[in-house]
Image (cartoon, rainbow, N blue to C red; front, side, top):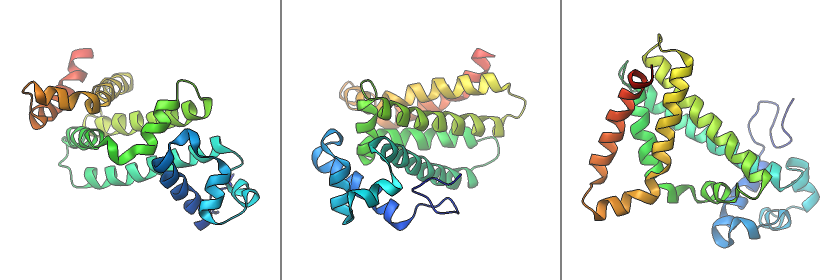
Length: 201
């Protein structure tokens, strides 16, 4: 089954892609809660009905935005993993993910969706999609480094590492004010991530 916002190959159609770009720009300008489907259609230069052909409602638009974000993230991760030494994929991925998390301001709309997740089912579903993909990527990199690792241990490790990383945006500046340098913090997270599977096995 093909998504309405996708072509038969699975790639977003030009109009669907422009709608996602418009959502991003509008959300950064005035906040996600204040962006309507009509606003997005107007920004793209199409009718509301034409937008609804691709995304029937705002929930579908948010989900498509998250899917696009995940796909872009996966592409960047594949590049990181392709140049990683065997046995070091997971550590390289953790460092990459930590740097991405530290620069959360680059992912403003995703952060807005996450902020809405507690009171908006569409935002909650979209952010759950993102985190399921994020955990699966981490788990798969760990298993690639250590094929004998039980799947449950790999997933638990991925979950613990992601939970550590998610706190970075709020903590990195205060930690720096107290004397903990960013590089030291990231190096420690990478080192700790390597020890988690043995600690929970």
